[in-house]
Length: 309
Ligand SMILES: [Mg+2]
Image 1: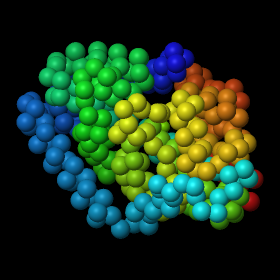
Image 2 (image 1 turned 90 degrees about the vertical axis):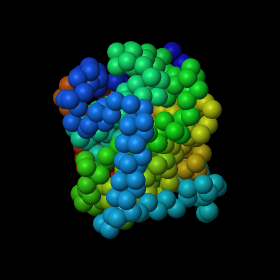
Image 3 (image 1 turned 180 degrees about the vertical axis):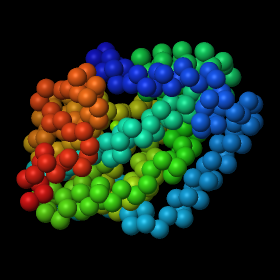
Image 4 (image 1 turned 30 degrees about the horizontal axis):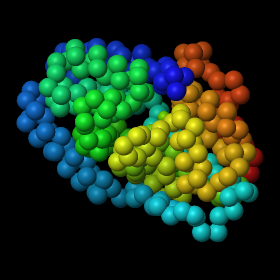
């Protein structure tokens, strides 16, 4: 458990820390969320943003804008052959889109504001608490649930669901073609999303990227549970394999931008463990022995060519 916590702490990027420090000056926040000084104003802002986000999702018309996860909630999957079927697991955030989009940083700002408004604490206190919960639990929400009796689904609504993702993510035609090409060869039986986010966020991201119709299923961190099961916990990978109905790790392929997540998949004996490291700095600090390194998801073609032929 200690190792798990340390690994998660190591994944916090220095940009995130800087972003949190910068937030003490509200006027510099480009997203404006901190301009709302009372809890009432904050709640009104979030409610308005949620409506805008939903309206945007409903108005999308590009290919792949509607999630069509065939096996969501269905287990066992019809006609599955768990011992021989091959499954490709895809992380979502900072993997299907680049970390340089800075969505992670915006997310940290929403988390910070949630701490300030909901717990009625100062920016400095919120910053410290956020860091403490990250260090101890890996996810801010774990500490909030444990010590402040916060409803995790409400937290998710005011943080992930409220993010103005549509201002950042656009349909990615090259990514769509990559996944279509992977499906076409039939070398992989199921394409499966595997994320630490809640399902709403996962579905919104794939819709905005225009790949919502290309995956068979989704394993997410269920915020409605009292104890959260999330990567890099081995139990999280076991859950994903069970839901995707695959029993042999040697038939599992996995791509993720977190070194600790890739360490777990290697430990469990996955066939190919692909670590997405976007910058040269990442490459120096976070390389994992036994993994295949890529800088961009489109490089999948080059590192697992056997699946595309
Ligand atoms: Mg990720």
